[in-house]
Image 1 (tube, rainbow, N blue to C red):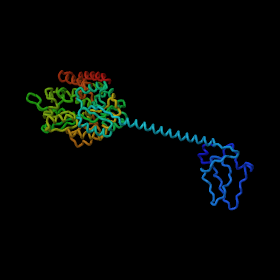
Image 2: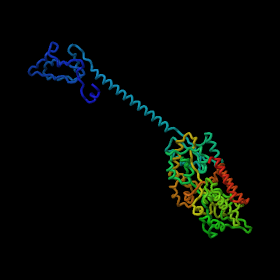
Image 3: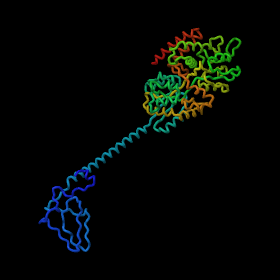
Length: 525
């Protein structure tokens, strides 16, 4: 009988194979007739129909005063069949029992193996999850007491990860960063300038799509960050702030001159001349604007880049339009060379002159405000957008970005921290904590946080322009001893040659273009 029959609940044949059914045999010497019951005699019921072995007929029990009842099946003693042969167990039934036992044992073993294997995997996962990781994080501007408050939020949700933040000195920072990453002793996470990817491409770990996708990045951050940080489809870092070149206005000087703030470059020269005050010898006592020279003007290279961009020059390939390049150089230097010049090399640095109240207009970034107020907390000024040329609303951006080292031994954890830094709530808390130690925090890098600064007349002008900003390889104040400072040298030489040596703007532009191309080629572009 096969197993299917057993599983369907059909009872097996109780007669052992090769053994004749004793109930079917004829009466004989070895098969006596059953005893006929006497009147009023109790009759024992027949044995149960299914027993492990065939049960021959037996004589009924003698009558008793009580009605006899059959013993339970388990209590019926085995009876030898006729002929004295002992019936053996059904081999098919025994085989089924063995198979059933083996099947149960096999199932138990498999179940135990699965449980044990799952336990090992769980233990391995728990071990990996609880592994203690320490990440070195290099910053530049913020003190540990500010950053640690933000970092603690991350560590609270990731107790196995410790972020060790340290504030670095900007001087020789890039060289130190490259050297340390190169020999394997550098930070896991570090800050870099938006113009540095061309120099750091082999040191930066691209962010995986599960950290932030290209679409998410474009939705969250300004176009300038997209252009600077997405290279060949790879995202190289997360900006925590944005800063743009804006125009600081001395309200008292403008009111004294009775003129309004220039909104176009076409009006800029005449307004700056009206603000300028000279002595009887023609020496400048109060300047309308700091333009025309290089060495005594803060952010001169950024200001000239602004003129390049608004005049149609490609800031990543300035040699593609040398005519527009020379026009911008000629216009810039005219503020220090014309008969109605408003600035010269004898003036204080532009930031100091503005702080003293001796400069009508100053081009600067948001962080310049702290230096200005430190020098003169009573200065009456405001901040507006830079002038436009032919309706082109363009300014220059300079900002810093957080990236992960390609040599980090804990890249997964470092990228997870960058994902945390990109969150809206993280930037808000960072700004709040920074604002507790100074007038305002770093302007938000996220587009969706711009309007939250609208009521802040000091900060809002810098983020208001961010959507129309461009980056430049002529960035000032990066201290990189690399592409920016090398190109600034070429640019300042071009300006000085025009102002001091009467070199034509066309010749100066040609020399500048060659130096620009050579420098970019040096860095692989």
